[in-house]
Image (cartoon, rainbow, N blue to C red; front, side, top):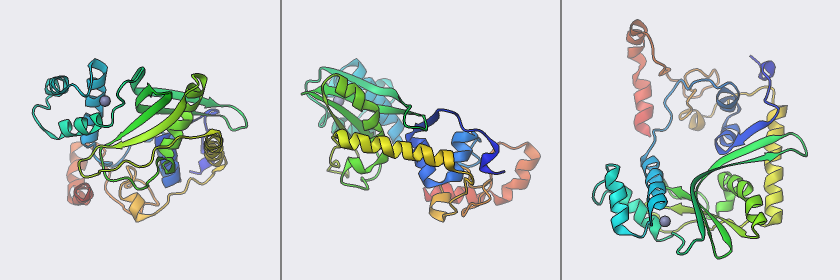
Length: 275
Ligand SMILES: [Zn+2]
C-alpha cells in the first residue's frame, strides 16, 4: 500500500508524540497517527513517572508541596506511604516550586490552530504545570528519567512546542514566557537552561511546525527507517516489513495460535528485559 491510499485530514493534528514519530520513522507515524493501527508490540513500559506526575498534580490542587504533612497525606491516600521514591521526587520538586504564584494550573491541555500560510495544522499539548509569578508565565515539565541530552531546554522540540502553545496567552496578559524542565531524579543535580523565547524564536517555531506539516503533506512513501536502534523500541516492529528488529506480535491470539506462537515468544521477553 502506498502512502497515497488514504486522505490526510484537512487540518493536520500535530502534537509532540506525532512530531517525534514523524522524525523517528515515517512508517511508524503513518501506522499510528494516520491509520490508527493498534500496536503489535510492547513499547517501553510506563515507569514511576506516571505516579509522580499524578501525585504532583494532586498535591498542588489540594494544598502546597511545601507542606510536609499535606504531601504525606496525599501520597498515603494513594498508596505511597512513608519515605518511598515518590516522596523524594515531590520533595525535589518543592525546592524548585515558585514561592508566591498568583495563578497556577496542572496538567493543562492546550490547543492552537495554524491557518496561514498553508498547510493548516492544529497543535495540542499538555503542560505539567504553569505558574504565573513575577511577570512570568512559568511552564514546567517534570522529568523523572535519565539526565537531559542537552544543556538548553530550547533544543528539545517538545519544549518549543509548549512555548508555541503558550506564547499567545502570555502575550495577551503582557507576561514573559519561560519553559523550564525539572529533572527530579535524585542523581541529577542541575536542570538545563530554561527557554525564554522571544518573537524571533516563536516565528522560527511557527515555521518549523509548518515545515513539518508540509513535509507530511508531501510524503508519499512513508518508508520505514530500518534502523535497529529505532526499530527495537517500535510498537510495530513485528508487523513492519522494514523492521530491523523483527519480533512476534503480542496481539491477543486464540488459544491454538497462542500455542503455536509460544516457541518464538522469548524474542519479545528479551526486548522487554533489555529495557
Ligand atoms: Zn510545588
